[in-house]
Image (tube, rainbow, N blue to C red; front, side, top):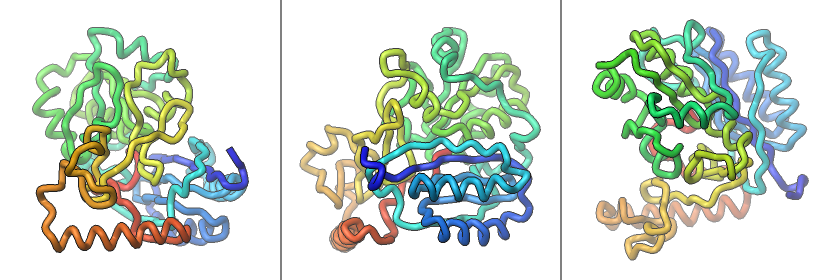
Length: 315
């Protein structure tokens, strides 16, 4: 890969008390501009969640500035390279939570499940006595998941407590192994289970991204690609760019069957949203798609292709 044209993508998060998170927004904007950083950062009283891109030196400088604060000295970003323009601007969002469960009493700094290294994950999930749960949203599971994993069929993380109550709550002695994209969602999900009386809860350390980076394809129990929250859309083993595309109309991941459908029109619609488009909506999408293409050609900021759901980061 040409290092002069490739982008370094850094993904990181940390749960830590951050009452001055509004002030952090100003600092990160200044540091981001100085180092030509693009991407999305979420700040909340409970910490930071980020996926950013830039030159290798720019990313290193940006992360080192964050590490100067005592709360973040141990920050360890996961790094990947891509020839694509993964972001077109820097967005720093302040919220009540960096991953939105909707229950402020759940604190991963107090208690979380047992971390499982990628090298030990296959053995754990192959155990027939272990209930393996994909804690991500429906559209993410559609693209890829671990063999035999349970899909909770959630559209957002706020639905997790209801799933737990309806599907898991009757047996709190069962052994549960969970996974998510980068590990952050499982920090909260495992904390939620433990604080609600579950005894034995495991989660994949560093999430799917750590697994795909660490485990070679021939030894992998992963099936498909991993959905991520930037313009790459998905990655595969070795964190190489995947091939999955999104529908510009409904922002849903497209299968080959979708693309081959007569209801698929590049930049406009897919079988999932075709029947719901009226003429005004179609014209709006056509204009939006034209502007997106112009922005990509000029490598300038645009609202971009938003992901399904409310979140804009891997959880």
